[in-house]
Length: 166
Image 1 (cartoon, helix red, strand yellow):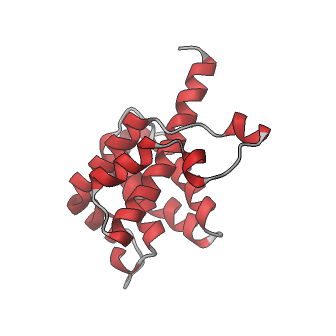
Image 2 (tube, one colour):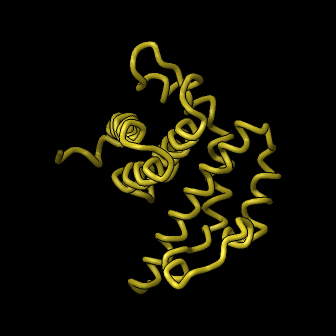
């Protein structure tokens, strides 16, 4: 694969991660079923769905999500949620439970932990950085720090071989 092809794939996966977080949020807040969320997120290009007009900058920066990756992410988080939630709970500050966390932050953490559990093709540091950036899209400084702390601790536990030299 060429460098340009790799960059396009990375951008499509980044876009899929953002869409997955939005889909998980929708499922959490509106009790929308997974099949409906996947259909909504993959049926219409994001810019068209949002009603935004494309600017020249967006044309080069915005990339449609990798639909296969997006579907795998959403189905995987739902399938493994009973395993993911206790892992996250165990990393939160004393007295905090995942159920008390903001719905968007909860979606980010669930998606990130799923990738750490099942996507060994994606380096743990990449997973952590991707979800920190997604958190910055929605929040100020505190929540991205939470994402960093939780995912870093879990990555070191779930993928210790990737952190041996650290």
